[in-house]
Amino acid sequence: MALILNLETATTNCSVSLAKAGTTIAIKEHDTPNYSHSEQLHVFIQEVLKEASVALSDIAAIAVSKGPGSYTGLRIGVSAAKGLCFSLDIPLIAVETLTSLASQGKLQDFDFIIPLLDARRMEVYSKVFDNQLNEIRETRAEIIDANSFDTYLQKGKVLLLGSGASKCKGVLENDNLEYAVDAVPSAQQLAKLSFEKYQDKDFEDVAYFEPYYLKDFILQAKAKKFI
Image: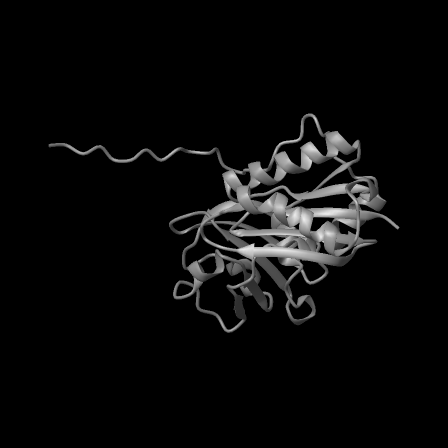
């Protein structure tokens, strides 16, 4: 059965899992606001392979969380995934970060699942799913206000989950609304989703694949001091 190495670096959680036929058999992750992915990612890869007694040559494919998310985090994860695919001559699988995050919710308890990632200030990256994880609305970068997600809140129970969900507290008030603000994208959820793509032969072009940033990266220059 297919062994897939899953890499999740789109947010503060540096996460690596090894899965067999969609079931995680080893996982290593660390969630820290310091974004230490460059130091941790390859160490975690070695640790999960060692824990499962698996060699890199046994891996059938590499899966990576493709975004949206942290510009630097995505670059680190995608670069590592592409490097492994090139060296091992195996397929690259990309899973959208918000889809992976949404799969953490108790889907059967809600009519709509809305994963949200913090995009600074009152902006979030969001996407809307039904309780079968079918896409209802595409990924967007949007500003949270009192009318956000009204369309879905009027129709049924809604779960907001992820780092961006905390921005909605105190802004949105509705009895149909529940929160899971501590949910973070994890390679645990990538396991099932990447295996489904592997079975469908839904692979990326390793040479040309790029992360899904959604917005252009803007370098914030430090303010100049005047004397």
